[in-house]
Image (cartoon, rainbow, N blue to C red):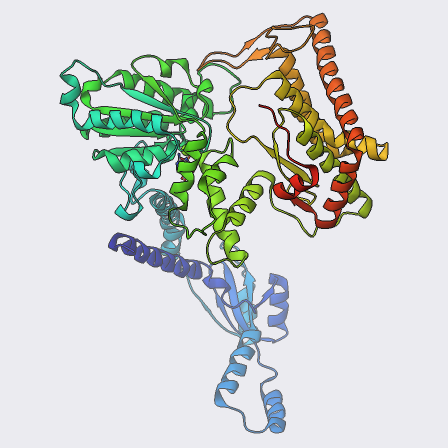
Length: 639
Ligand code: ADP
Ligand code: MG
Ligand code: ZN
């Protein structure tokens, strides 16, 4: 707690204290809640009956005491039996009795009853009057209290804002949240921590170099780009790369996220942008990094107006464009943006002179993945059998974030499995877990369903195994997993593939249909277990027809109804005639039917193997690569 805060707390207690006091004072009249309230008539009756001992006539009330009737009899009686009583108890009882004797009568100030005083005289009641001075109370109620209330409200608001963003943040609405970014030296990220995206690293290195020695480049007339955009799928290391730049740069580095510009108050975003650029210019040469820039950079004037935030975002984007135009690159401010959705960005952002250079941060290839594994296993104690190359081969399509996840999971699994180093088996388990979700060993499945799953998965495996061009079958399991999967067959290519032949695509479709085909061949009945397979089959077959032009009747045509828009452009939408749609559907159907028939034929032919594999699966739940090979013989893959 800093001194300023402590000061505030003190004030707080003071104010609350005063408030409580004042409330007490206001309700002073009600201190004796036990008092009896009488109507004026009852009161007069009581006086006439001689029940009243004493009254005080106030402006609005008459307060008084009943005559004490219980005093003599009661006290002596009760105390004889209980013996000696502590003096404080006597006193308490006395007070209680006094309070029970009290009464009050509400009265209007101008209610002057000429009969009252004679009545009191006659009954021998002691009476007196008092004119209340209410000036202080009225002053307090009408003036001080409202003011106090607002002061308190203000204090509260300011403190709230203060806790949101430093002291007196209320005065800093428009200021940006970017701070010059520096991590503790032991946490600092450098290019050594970024692997598998060497081209991107190379490009940003050049830019950082530019910032450090502008002269070297200026000599040849080179001009630094104003802004670069890191573009790539999620988890490929864009944010990581930016942090590494900060670690390496040796120049001030402003880091903030696109959503930081958005506030619920109109105009704040634009003000933040302005302030950010002001600060940046003051610190030049420097780097400004805006992560998730699509939060502000979405296309303007398209789409539906989504609530009040929309205009605000547009204003912010406009301000950003204005600011980017407003300085030239010789000022030494480099703006780096990152996004995984470049296609939604406003084209104006991508114009030369703004984010005119784009750096692709793509999913890593085999060697890249190996390098990323190396980075993330640096701090792990690895077993002797761990082969990073093999791990990289088993994780095609993984991005850096997923690999980091695998390494972490593997370390946790190693602990759970009681290993004293992280073994290859831990990694393999971790990969499976990342791909297929957690095992649910205790999910109860009845025996018949288990049999269906066993044959279904064996069908996938056998069709995949004996189909030329299909992917290597790594593992078959009937342990239920994660979201609804009752079993799975892990098939993976041995290497990254960028092209697929027609035969390979057909092989994939056949393998996917193998599960349902096995059910039909064995049980003569099909189940719902193939829904996910069918979805993927449908997508593959449709792509073969409409995107790759691989069907017999509509060869070599791209019939895609929608091609993804290139950076920032609208996606194009073509209308297809109904007749064409029909023919496409026919072709898709033909492909699927052919593949299904072939799969069924193959399974009928290999019925013994199917039977053997399913039995083995029911026995031991999981078959790994080696056991599959023992069972089926060497895989005939042609690629
Ligand atoms: P992005 O911003 O592209 O969505 P991140 O940079 O946030 O992805 O990556 C998340 C995490 O994944 C990083 O903190 C890092 O641990 C890991 N990671 C991602 N890409 C790489 C990479 N190329 N090299 C090393 N680690 C990576
Ligand atoms: Mg990110
Ligand atoms: Zn299946």
